Length: 112
Image 1 (cartoon, one colour):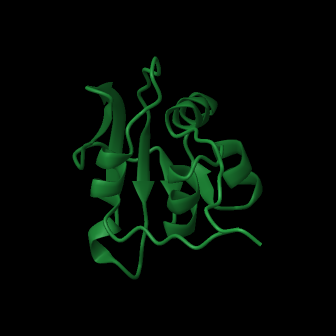
Image 2 (cartoon, one colour):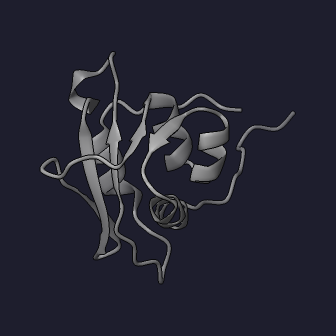
């Protein structure tokens, strides 16, 4: 649908923020063979001042590759990522929490 490559997973998760009123706690790991800084990023996504707090010290629950991370950050539901084969692991609670935290409205700036 669009092209997005996250070059700094930690900064992307920290800067993404949460919608108002969403309070979640879920863990994920990003596995990226091209950008070593993104490998094994464990993000504890708890709301604090409206921003997720990445935490490299926790074990992973939900595992995403770079394509899954890009889609999640742009608002794709985790259930959709699972259907597309872009994520593994985690629990139904993780799926719901991360989907709520990273929800977003799709838009396109280009006209055709």
